[in-house]
Image (cartoon, protein in one colour):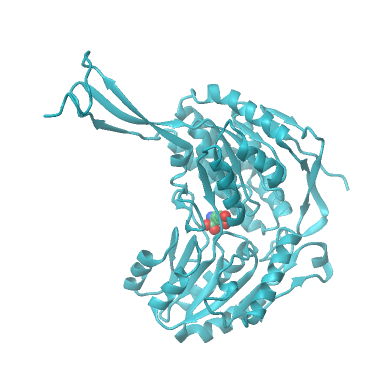
Length: 496
Ligand code: UN1
């Protein structure tokens, strides 16, 4: 079958990897469908991209921020026009169903419009000086060249969360998209190019994490790294970047709990659990992977949840009637299989699914049944470790306090959901759940771009995307203007 060949974008030119090597991008629902060949880049390509970014930065940082923002606004309008095509491209390369890939493109559009407004804010502070005839203020400054490393599960939204705030702040970027899903990042960057972004402000180098990603992290001219991916890789990224004192924003794993209390609207909690656990085939860092059930509703919830999960239609996401797409690659299927073995070995009870789907059309891709474990206790590995697949476990509890304790007993802290009609419990949950995001009567997935996104403990290292991204992509400069025409010594001349 013939397929297109894509190139890196370096200094405004589309160039193959210097080695000439490529990586094939396959449709996970049908491996005979080759989406394209993408460069397999090495340090040489990264060096060229960083040099091009450095050159572009010299003039981009001087473009007024409201003007930089106009490019983003324009890019958002272009994405609106191309939404359907880009969603279809994304379903082909990543697998999730069309409704969700349309949502992913929409998230990038939302981010463009949100960040375009930031171009007229980027606020600093003014504050009185301790000396007479002296003016004090703080201003935000860009960092320079920044390196962005993005995952395959939100292949357009997450690059937009990083690129747009970085660009509006006056930085130049080198982005390495996930090896499995480069096309959506290419599409996003194409929209920026068509919106008039000057050459070199954004450069793409695609390739594997090991060669391309590491070269970017270690490059001395890269001033900061923003990474989204697993905690394991994030730990490596943070340690490598520390060697050259780069600030690093790490957004990593989750083991997100949905708590259902006895007084909850059960149908609503069921809808939320189904969407949170099996939306995106469970491949979100915000996915619901633990459902904590109060004993009074546990039996009824479990029975209905299992029945509904079993009736979900799994298949090719391009078919509008499909509810759950494939997993992104064979490695993810292996992980799901391994966790099924681990859970069974720990004594958990398999209530639904548990196997790869391999019959008929399923044999063309990488599919896994929606899988539910019951009888899970909080100390089991299936209750503590991230699977990143359509695998969810049910844990029962007696009291609200126990639920909070179980929810908080893991290493991760990204998203949590609490279903209750009791306003006191709702607010106690908001206060006590150790997570960057808490939903009341809504599932663990579905964050909006203009709120802070990120988590605590092993989920992150303290930074936030969305509201907070500008903080990462700028640095503060304190400015003092002395208009007294004489030497004024701080801490000395005004000491009485
Ligand atoms: C992710 O899974 O890495 O809140 C991001 C959500 C989406 C973003 C998920 N808006 O589920």
